[in-house]
Image 1: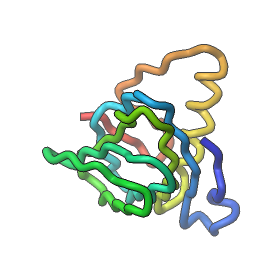
Image 2: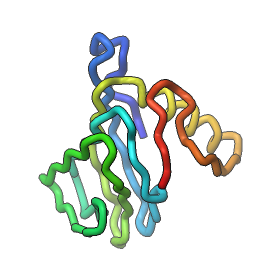
Image 3: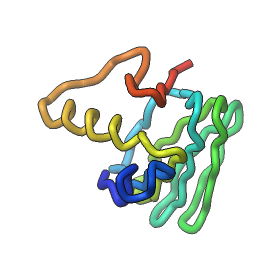
Length: 125
């Protein structure tokens, strides 16, 4: 994951990250965001996406916008790398992404009930 735009670059209006998922990546558990819109634009490969109780395969060029309070998750069930842009509005999600990256770099395996301790709490359900 690489951060392309954060609060300081967007007057706190937007987060943008580019994400690469290895083949077989299971993704996060189904979750909701209480305050932010979570958006995905697939650049390469096929992203398996679950929204509420339906599942879709999003090919390169596909876009999905998840409003607050909607259960969702994603995975790479293919044999190829999947790359996508992840947009969130408002900004703030970059703080969680930096913390998560640091935890993985230390060899940690995060298992919190809430992934984000910032004002943009993400609740898993």
